[in-house]
Amino acid sequence: MFTLTDDLENEIEIEGTTYPLDLSFDVVLRVYDLMQDEYFSPNEKVNIAFNMLVDCKDPYDFELKYETVKYLMENIINDPDESEGYSGAPSKVFHDFAQDADYIYASFMQEYGIDLLEMQGKLRWEKFIALLAGLRDKTKFKEIIGIRSADLPTGKHMADERKRLKELKEIYALKKDRKTKDEELNNMFNMLIGGK
Image 1: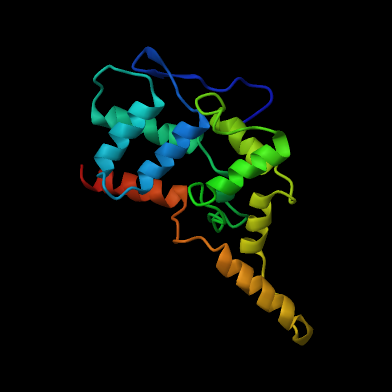
Image 2: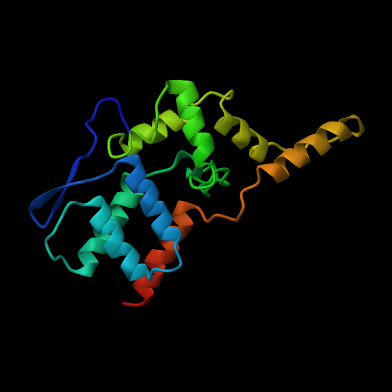
């Protein structure tokens, strides 16, 4: 969890040895892509994710890598759009980091003057997420999120507005039903547990 009173976690201790973490936003986004890639098996995903996130050349067993990746994904890497609602169930996802990359890039330039391509390897995931959440509604990314999440208006005098919003929803619709991070991780971790 991101706080203003604690330092960001830059390292992790594994069996008494401390290793640096790479939690820059671009690395975490690549891990997200990896988790949804059907080419790799769940075991390969864990091994690759471990190597991406932890600067460790020691030959640890799979179980330890699995527990480390699971810890990092559940406790440090989080996405505010996938936070739990009041019911405790994950909320509906209204963005996709890959599909919305150009809108996110443009919005960071517009709002903060930050070139995300120049910040690769520098900007921490937690800072990226805080800045993403802080984008104002006037940015393109937030405008699109607003369209995707808006309810269609009802009433006989709202026909034109309903038609307009429906067309915008079709234009900006997510191209595929993206699983939430939690669903994807749970599926992968459940497959691994079932295979043990």
